[in-house]
Image (cartoon, rainbow, N blue to C red; front, top):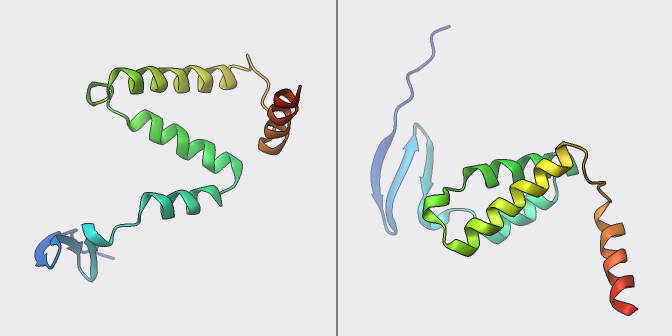
Length: 106
């Protein structure tokens, strides 16, 4: 079976440029909003959400981030590494939220 070579065509649309391959088109103005994407991501199983979070953190370009964002990225990576190395014990989200609520009531 011979695969058709991948090709990208660029056409104009009302909002700007549309890129696509064969019958699939993508328009920047119709792109999934961050909020909608987050809604979908939050429906993933816990392990898949963790994998996605890891991919997103790794994709950040530190040179393009401001100083505070660079610090948060470093903190996120440190926490991820602590979990992977077994240096911290994880808890389920609802349990963690309840612990915070209880601590705030004291």
